[in-house]
Image 1 (cartoon, rainbow, N blue to C red):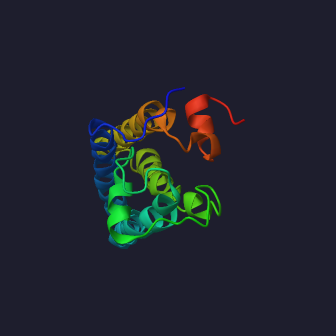
Image 2: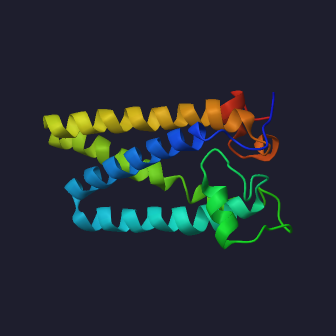
Amino acid sequence: MKKIDTYPLYIPFLRNLFNISLFSLALYILWGLHAGLSFFYGLYCLAAAFFIMPKLRCTRCFYHKRICSTGFSIIAGKFYKKDTQHTFTEGIWHNICLIPIGLIPLGGALWRMVFWKDSISIWTGILFILILTGLLIEHATLGCSLCHELPRCPARWVARGKKE
């Protein structure tokens, strides 16, 4: 499969459009459950965006200081130097820390759909699931499939259909 050294701008633009939509809707869903839950989720997302991704993931990536599928490598290149002592997947705990970003609001959306049963909860839940699905499809088709890190990435099964 062909790999690219820098992604075209439309890919990180599309990814971040999905991300902003997902985070905004997630904050709305969680705010409906409890304002504190929404606040702490927002803080967690900010920590992921400005520390977990750029410092612990992007600095180890081939795309450091280049346009990657998320655009975070450009940001990481401005604030953090390249980590040449670790591989992209070494110490993958930081990847696990990103999973709650989608799962927490998904759980909240399902909770609201099942127990509240009002039309707003049902439609926001359906919309959240559609955005999350779109993000995963975009990630697999436009992001992962062209990435230099794919052979070592723990999420390679998304793009290849199986884990090798």
